[in-house]
Each structure stands twice: as structure tokens, then as C-alpha cells.
Length: 110
Image (cartoon, rainbow, N blue to C red; front, top):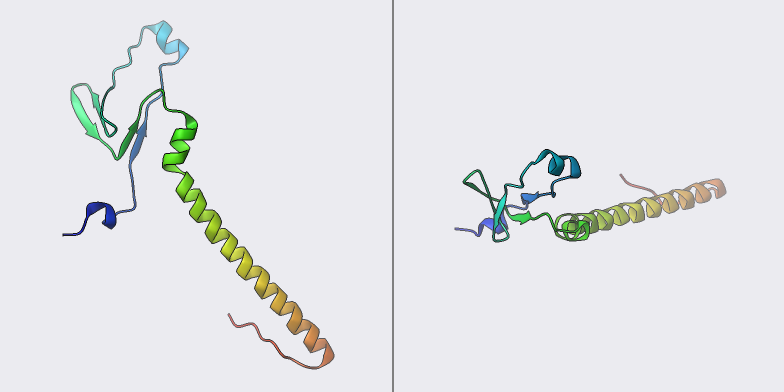
């Protein structure tokens, strides 16, 4: 049987924020209990995620874990598309220039 991580690229992460001032004034209690990096206990029931971020996690840590690779891949694909589009525009200009002189040397194929 194949490794489960190799079959699925979707990860479920959970981030907890600390109580805000109004919640503290109201007397609310922070009830999550963290077990390891992937489990949180709420009301006696365990919930398992790919990763759990406790309240002291910085935005940079969340970004590096959740979004950094996605942004990197997106930018790479975006740059490839822009590069391809620029090359096609240049080819179209060359074709147009050649047509004005009466010789068609380049053609753009879709």
C-alpha cells in the first residue's frame, strides 16, 4: 500500500489565538489542551490535524509552514506563463514586421 502522504497533497492545520481583552474581562477560560504538534483536546475529545499551532505561534511560523511553498510554486508558474506570453508577443511582432516587408518567416501556433 502506498504511503498516505504520497497520495494526498492536502494538509489540515489548526491555529489557536489567545483570549482577547474582552474575553479575559468576561472571565472566559482558554480550554484547548495541546498534545504534541498535531493534537488538541477540547471538552475531553481529541482532535488530530496535520499540525496544530498554539497561541504563541508567530505569523511568520504559520506562513512558513502553510503558505511559503504554495506562494513559491505559484510565483514559479506565474513567471513561466509571463515568460511564455512575452515570447509569443515578441514572435507576433517579428511576424508583423516581416509581413510589412512582404516576407512571413514566423508563425505563432496556438
